[in-house]
Image (cartoon, rainbow, N blue to C red; front, side, top):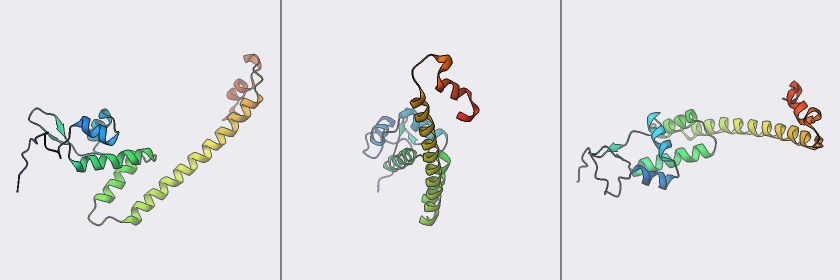
Length: 147
């Protein structure tokens, strides 16, 4: 059995540089560093020269985080999901409950966007491209009812 030193060899196929991880996960390097600072990903091992080296597990975790972000999960929701997944007895029911709550938030935002779209479409339709003092869009934006 081979023992890995505290300063992993970056030529090892399982130890990846931050640039490699960024390319594999489509997560920006600065975002990876940010996730490390806020505890979304564990601090990676470092080479003797201080360079970060990541494992395949870190790549998998970052891929999970990226996909969650694409689906609009907040960082707190992602933390909760990661905690549930990492637990001794992960419960699909708890993951589902968290995801259902997020789905309700998404549906609420979609409804809000639909209302905004209808108001904006009405404003655009009322515009006759005249002069600003008589512009129905500007007037509506000044009106508290437009909100």
